[in-house]
Every structure is written in C-alpha cells, then in structure tokens.
Image 1 (spheres, rainbow, N blue to C red):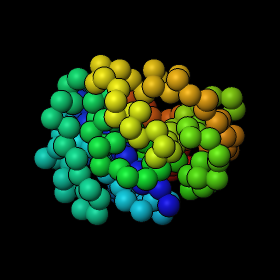
Image 2 (cartoon, one colour):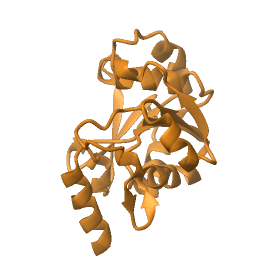
Image 3 (cartoon, helix red, strand yellow):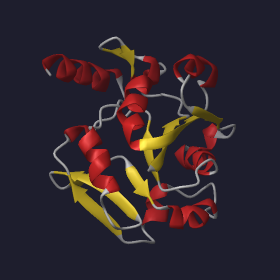
Length: 185
C-alpha cells in the first residue's frame, strides 16, 4: 500500500481563520481529509506550519512533520513531507477534504509514476507519486513547485466521477458551499 502526505502548513490568509479546523457535520476539515485517505495508505504524514499547535489535538493518529519554513510556500511543505515517506505516496492539500475512496483506489490501480484524477476534463487532487521519483523530488530546490516538477514527467490522468477532487476551501464562501453540499448528501 501507499503512504499519504497531507499539506496543512498554510496560513489560510483568504479565509482569515484556520480553515482546517472549521466543522462540517461535527468534524473538522483536517479530520475529514485524514479519514478519507486513511483506508488507502499505511501511514499519513500531516505537514503543519503556522497553525501547528492548534492542529495537534486533531492529529492523534498520524505522523506530524512541522515545516519550520512554511512561509516559503507550499512546496516547502511538500519537501518536508517527502522526507518522511519511503513508499509510493499521495499528496493532498488539507482543505481538499471530501475525496471519495474510489479516487484513491483508481489512482492506486494506475501504472504511471505520476497519476492525477480528472473529473469532466479537469485534473485535481490527490497526486500519486511513485517511490521511484522520491530522490528526484527531494533534489528540487525549495523555490520550485509541484507543477514544475511534474512537467518533467509523463502524467497519467485517471477519469473519476468525483467533483470533490477540485473543491478546496480557500475562502469562507467556499466553506459555506461545502456545508450546503454536504447537508444535501
């Protein structure tokens, strides 16, 4: 089985609050993200940053890696997480909380070293990375980004029927939309 990296090091500037602690159906966003990934991985590494201390009570069953350089951007958190994996792995932002199990299964069943889900022609999260690319990824400069890294390889796009691969919570309006969607389902 694979491992998982959840990126939770951001500053939530657009939401103006720690969006990962917002509640949907009585559970924090970060717990939704962890719980959706958990059945498909052997271990989860949550990379924290600015809100490290606030998140800790919600991270009781995962490995925590604190990114001291979180202000340098998301790729610094990616590199922090990658230092803790030893197998194939998923990378997902902590605010992409409602990805279905079918997405994880579809990505695990792919054959390329890099795999992304696609819904109605639009790629989303999580990203699957083969352990064969670990050293290449770790060799990237902290000022790089995942898009730049991925552009060096052929990526397998796997069609899925899950709009949540593209729904993140950047603002409180995004959060309100998610709450309404989840109340309907």
